[in-house]
Image (cartoon, rainbow, N blue to C red; front, side, top):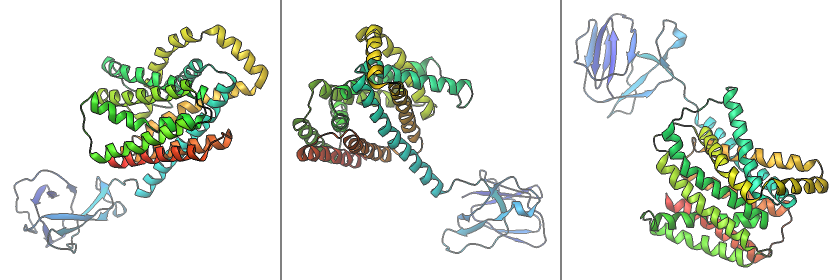
Length: 396
């Protein structure tokens, strides 16, 4: 480490400095800078021998004259284990503690899983009473977009600085996101929530196959082996599903494929783009809403929506409006938190968290909706989820 000391406007530099002062001279400044030619200072003896390491610093910043703003900086030579006695004093910016970071990440995970479970519950309730997945998907994106637009306008959240290139790169991501979102909603309108998520746990298999055969990427053997329990578990769960529906099954499979392409496009197109996870997902929601709305109108249409709304209100009552609002709000919140968590954790930690989220949704849905499930079906689900965990470990 190279250090620079300015004493009475005369610098002292060296790779290892042992400073002994014959008379008190105030040290006005300590800074890190490139090595400069060593000069012999007045009233000081400089010895340069080995590399100098700073062993402990408690504060860093502009030095003042008050004693309470200073902490002693200890140093040691590369071949010595004990600090060198010195009177160098400096200040540092305090960094967040490791415990605080763990608490923050734990909070992200708890919110992510909890919000996802609540969304799936309300989403299934809405689809049971109001089987219009295209409109339901559109409302989810619309409410999320509205929340973020209001946040930007009121300066609750800082609006992202985007340009044409940003939206151009985001377009294929939004197309894949829209298809995956609608396909998953269609799936949950036809089959149990637990079954949809069991099939969606097979997403890593699609990721490897697409990357291998379309992009030419290769993976270690353990990655390929981890696909066996994923594919086998999903197949076993599908064959033994009591309320199997082909549209529901294909919806989950299409959702897997679409989200794989979403991730690929996102990695390729968003490199170098300085947009936070929260704002990135907000922009993605807005663009997806613009893409989805005309298709939702063409597939289902306002007449079907109005008739279905009257039927749902007559059967459920005012609570139905709350269900629709809740599923839309919680959809945006859980996705927003998941994207925000990517700013704080590694891809491996995120992948493990996603696996655990899938388990929490499956178990919660089975309990709340009292979904009938056979032991062999549960075994298939467990094998598929475990295979997903193995995949996340093998890919790192």
